[in-house]
Image 1 (cartoon, rainbow, N blue to C red):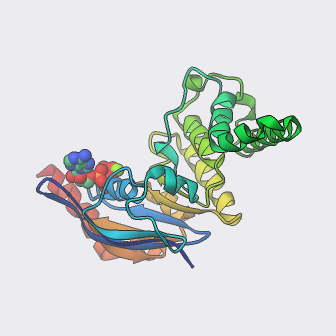
Image 2: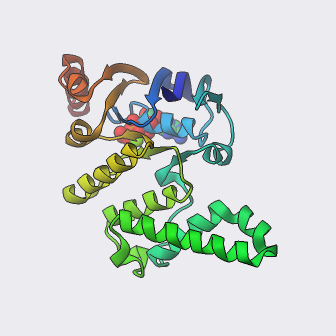
Length: 257
Ligand SMILES: Nc1ncnc2c1ncn2[C@@H]1O[C@H](COP(=O)(O)OP(=O)(O)OP(=O)(O)O)[C@@H](O)[C@H]1O
Ligand SMILES: [Mg+2]
């Protein structure tokens, strides 16, 4: 069953046609890899899905509801999160506080309401604390909980950002190059965590240039080129397709010419 349906999305930046009718769908409980050469429109499409950019045509449905043009906030409330596009990490605060703040933001309204019922309030605080610690534990960050986030490596910070996004219990997460600039061991660990979350029912649409990660972790892959989806299928079929090779080699030839 499709949880996300992107239908014929068009985007122009001035005279530049960046998306020329991009169509894709993501099934619930899967990791979908989104690949394509530099500048082919991947980040632009993720931003349009999450309403960080307006499109010039097309529609997007999440869980069967039309979310085209809804505010990012409303989309987030519906259970779709964009991991590295949430308000920035507080680098001078401990990892723990970054997660607590994200959890409080998520549950803020409930907290205010329950201020009048102290018992409910303390129960909720306890539940939040449990959730924060469970998440830190799951992401293997517990030993870093009290470290300032700025002291962490790039990969560990990405895990913290994923942890913050998890505070909202999203059904689906968009990720733009989660393993970029991350050492290969941690990069693999990030994907292993996504896989576990996926087995628990979450869904991911992930832009990724690292083909080994795509091969190992994606259930399905879309390749975009010049703003149009050119290939779709299981990772090995897409990556071994002659068109995949030409697209990437073509890009390299263009870049060097
Ligand atoms: N705000 C903007 N204004 C004008 N042009 C833009 C803007 N954002 C992106 N572009 C252009 O749109 C095209 C697609 O960019 P996009 O960032 O979506 O590519 P991408 O597939 O994510 O590339 P990469 O793999 O390098 O991240 C590029 O030509 C880019 O220069
Ligand atoms: Mg990009």
